Image 1 (cartoon, rainbow, N blue to C red):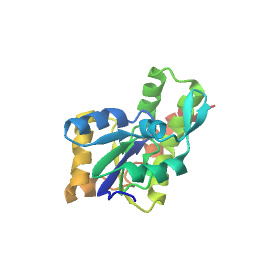
Image 2: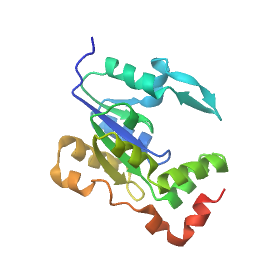
Image 3: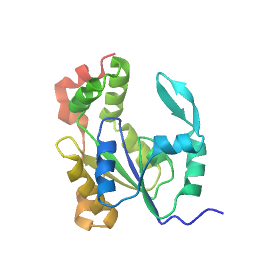
Length: 187
């Protein structure tokens, strides 16, 4: 029998938007935070590896994750919005800054451009919205992880002013990057 789950919060976004750093701040605030990557390993939902990245069986993970979660929990990872959460917070970052962050991690040019393009076209936000769940988006570009965690806490706690400020649809990266778009998506 599946234990009761009061609330599962997905903390998602393109790699490099600040999920892990924000998750650490949420832990300090008393939230129970679980990494999707760690859960996939623990629950045997890794299909293999591709280009140095683990390939997760998202359907199997979504099924198994609900069986092991109790109480309020934050699922951190770029697949968390696909795991039937109750609430989704999508972290966003200016693609120009995101490109610098990902290059700083030593990622291949192809992987950097793939993720920058995904951020530019709102890929994860669109997937999150397609779930039909409650979705919020936060531009983390100029915020510290602590500031982002406070916003997430406001959203989760039901602060209507915070929720209103971070409803999706206010971020338009194509308008922001303007003429620099070519340098972000050239392959």
